Image (cartoon, rainbow, N blue to C red; front, side):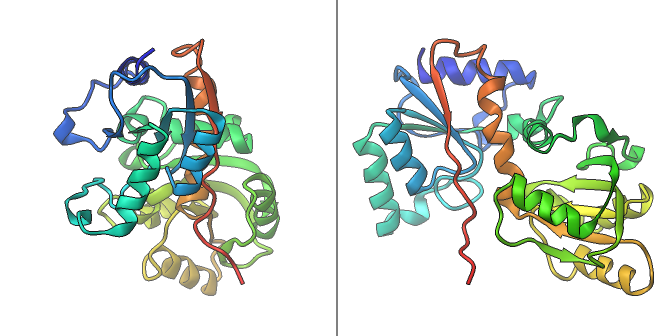
Length: 274
């Protein structure tokens, strides 16, 4: 199969009408559409370490969810004189790797592929509850077996291999009604108040976030907790909240590429902790 055939098969399976090239970031970043695919690597982000691991595996196609070239649109005009860009590009070309970004079509599918992988990873598929009509496409809400915020921290540290988890609220608070807002969704998609509206309208105990802005939802939850409301927030970060979607992408696309090996390579958190 060629790179183009793999991409076309994936987009077809999402059920999303193929987006115009100038309307999406789901573009081929490196390599050729006509390349024959040997093995595929799926990952949250095609970092230098992921590229090296793909080359070691013998994969010549990487499917990445997030940018290769450091900005949301993956534009490279600003990088013409940047040595980091040229060195990374040389590494990719040395191993003749095609890198395709699978972001917009993945989130726009009837079943968001990132949430599908998250549910599989944490085992919450059967706990979903309905969002309010006005926020029905914003995140996913759950009614989980009663636990505490601290116990959930230990759960995610184990499940997602995390060293540090940020929280707002009382660690001993009871938690049942939860919404997960993966990646940048927790910033509100241009409307900062949406996570807070969801918390109020769906009577949530806890918001589990990817990225945060410290003066919005975290400030709201902190004040709510200080006023005696049973409200909390748990922050996984963008990468940890979305990586499971790419981890479980391989099983979803196996019928598209039945004769091609698919390997997941964890891009890992971008931070070290001291």
